[in-house]
Amino acid sequence: MTADQFTRGNRVSTVLARKLGGELLRLRDEAGLTQPQAAAALSATAAKVAKMERGWVPVRDPDVRILCDLYGVSDEKAVERLLSLAKTDRERRKAKGWWHQYPVLRSLVEYVALEDIATGVRTWQGAFVPGLLQTPDYARALAVGNADWEDPDDIERFVEAKIARQARLMDGNPLNLWALVGEGALRQLVGGREVMREQLAHLVESSRLSNVRLQVVPFVAGSHPGMTSSFNVVSFAEPGAMDVVYMDTTSSTLWLESERDAVRHNVTFERIARNGLALHDSVALVERIRKEL
Image 1 (spheres, rainbow, N blue to C red):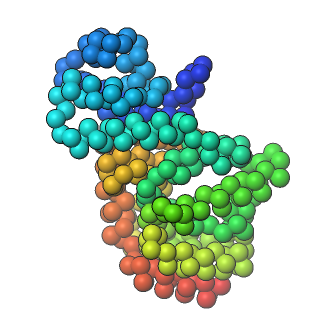
Image 2: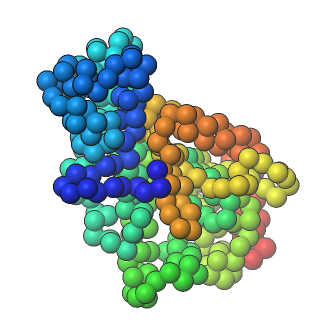
Image 3: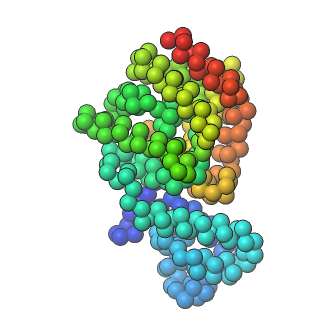
């Protein structure tokens, strides 16, 4: 998908609903059944089944169970995973989160909304410090450097929104963050020396949180699987169970919602991590670069 959220009339296609719908479609195909046959089991129309499989409508728990029975899904863990995905999507659709105050988030709105209900995020960034670990001055300097703002006042609102995301790292059910950061991101003088000194100090401080795992991929690692692109893997249960992949490009945002894509990016992430320094050595490198400034 090349858009994070689609709207058609009063219906909205969300990332989580498309992931659920894709799973239901796969199970129906494997069972050799048609949409009209699924619709008959639900006492519904084939059009409703099509909407469910395309992520246009929320899916009720009873419908998930009926379809699982019809498709021969006997693994209760698999059924629970689909039920959890359906419930998470319904809650996401009803949520009136703080992010709605910030239209300047633009295409990031759906990502921030999912991050707010996620259990974990794995992020690989080779060019800049991940948003959840940025200082206000660093975030501001990045926004100014982006030069994609018609109204300069929007930059301050954007920075405010980015920093508000970081509350997830310290709330009652904190987000688990595993951040892989390229050494180049630590040496790029975003905002100048003082801004970078403050940013690097903040990285060290953040690394002390029990739910934050920071690894630096040093220059000496040479070629590694993360050199072609950066990405985030967002989890809503145990790792791998309900993962979606988010990538932000110059021209668009990209959501990869299939299980295959999630598995592939998790494997890639772990391969990049093997090129990274251990936590203690990562922090030592951050502190050394800060002293050089």
